[in-house]
Length: 424
Image: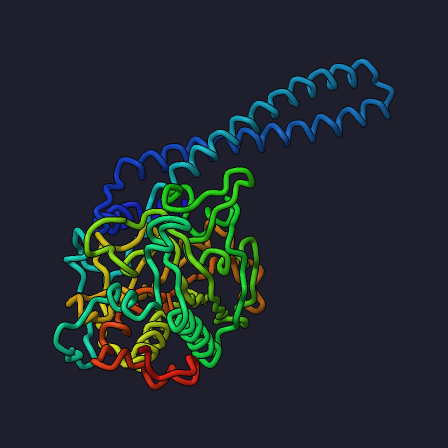
């Protein structure tokens, strides 16, 4: 959430930057500034009334001490009226502040200067491509057919048990999942990330803190009786560890990682682009989260991107890195790098990771602040996160790219984790 101070002081800059995200902010920005002026006036009236009440209270005490009973009683009548005014002013101020908050949460984060204009994914900028394209055997199969051939992932059984988008992993398919999770976690631990095992359900405050609410209610699974949401990513519970927390600047960078199942309702159900593992309602993912000093957050973003790239290299997957354009950038992100791996049998690139800097946007909603040594005033921290990695499309590419006439080869880095070198 953008701060009122930033919006007031950099009004034209905010409007100009948000235009890169194809968001016309002029009308709502003007309304916010107008409402904030009303809020400041209401706050001033409330402060003056409270000051007058305090003054009258002291006068009443002095009147009683002096034996001026009539004057004291007259002042008490004034305080009764004043207290009623203060109550009304408090209620009005609460309404104004809620209205202001409702407007503020409708405004996306402003993009980093490197973000280019664009309408959608077709306008994203490819900044790097690496790895050799696999040469497939004749009559190579897509992963959903390989899964059926080797009985490692059962989409029909998942549909029977739950519905589309909830596959069942079996035998070596299940072991490959577990191997990848352990590999990703070990890599994160070695890179200095502390492992967390968070809840996979969150409350409304947590959803608001990282920007899922009120913007994305329809994309999350909701547990109505308890008013909980199933998490769309481990980013949400991990980042909310620091909600309403003031950290020391000396603690930066704060690095955490977690494996969780993830749940997303918005996944589609039709067409080749969503077939098999390409898009699921439930999937496994290892997430990395950084809390960082504002002066160093973009340096950290680059380090996170390098880290994700290193994992893809170890998995021997061809990949490319994209810088998202304004039209494809998420509501809360200031800058995002997407990682895609090449899926040979489908002849397409599959997104497997997004690494993002949210600057102070989430921190303002979370009230996540830090203090420099020797300073009294707390400032907003920067938050960053990235997939490291999401499993479904990684598995899809591994199966398709490594298929042979004798089965599916496992990358060397994973053999110690799987306990086997081939799926046959």
